[in-house]
Amino acid sequence: MQFKLSKVSAEEAATRHVIEQKRFAFAQESIKPQLAVQEAEVERLASMSRLRNEELEALRVRASMTGVLSALPVEVGAQVQPGQNIARVADPTKLKAEVRIAETQAKDIAIGQLASIDTRNGIVEGRVARIDPAVQNGTVLVDVTIVNALPRGARPDLSVDGTIELERLDDVIYVGRPAFGQEKSTVGIFKTNGDKLTSTEASRVQVQLGRSSVNTIEILGGLQPGDWVILSDTSPYDSNDRIRLN
Image 1 (cartoon, rainbow, N blue to C red):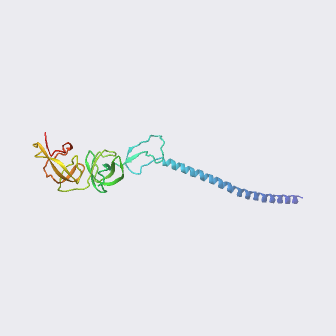
Image 2: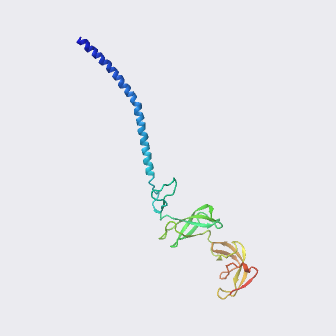
Image 3: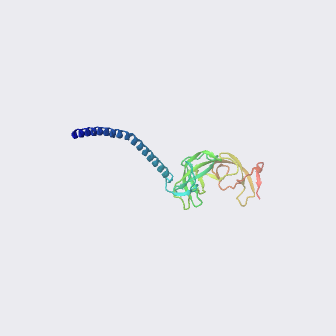
């Protein structure tokens, strides 16, 4: 009887063992999908964490060049939009000059022409690097790169005067640009009958004008070196060939 009872217990244990093995295998098979779901959730949260860290790092704006902070138009804590200018950095050793030329005088400007920039603390040489294709307020913006070393005190947004050399004419007769008359034309100009101090009269002479700059104009005929002429507006005396000087 004891042997039969032990045999029945062994059979029951074997049967329970088989059932538990099957249950264990089923549990393993069912855990895999659950584990995959949890792993996917962990990866999603890790990706979100990396994205937030990248966004946080992107909020730290760094200049792409070495220079001096010249403007900071935003305040601490202000919200900014993508693409908004939040700071301006300039390299004081690499500056360019922006010269505004009247649209009527910009037709002869070309890339590479020589220029001189007056910084109020010295004159530096430069070359035309860019010509803005658009006209703004009657002027054309011309960028001039500085060739030699900048003078002391040069800084961004400094007001300067620029002169662009369109062409150099050697051994020519020239005078200051008169208030009337265009280049390559013939006009009547009053010439004094003597020097500047002793002349009491001025006579009208026909003068052939050549090329002009901002403040001088070439004389092709009608005047000689040393002649004194009146460059101011003499239109009220257009009917007269001679005027008296007081």
